[in-house]
Length: 157
Image 1 (cartoon, rainbow, N blue to C red):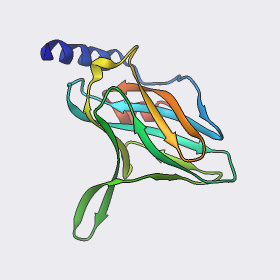
Image 2: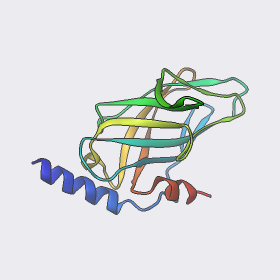
Image 3: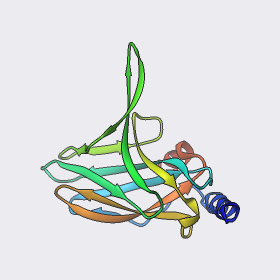
Image 4: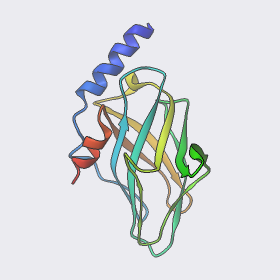
């Protein structure tokens, strides 16, 4: 059974082309775009998720949590570099500045970490995540699976 789930997960990743066109997702004054999850297609892996959140409001907001049925939990990871080394910590929330944006992008210090991710649960190359914001509330959004997160992020340019 595990072998079949791994094969199905790999097929879902391979079938997912870079997300050049995505369904617009809005929560209040927030626009969510460039929604991708990097995955090798292996069941049970920890996979990184990325998103751009643009806030058109004059008031700030906060990303409070992310959940999905495709992972046992989702954490907000922050890579911190110092003279003594590098650490990866879990942040409790992420700020979305007023009239600004939160960029959780490949190569940055931030990523969503999907723990025990199951790519076989993807439908049409996407997994559904629920993002909860302090002011804007909850919104569900499709995140495209990709084997190359940097290329997929750049494909939006």
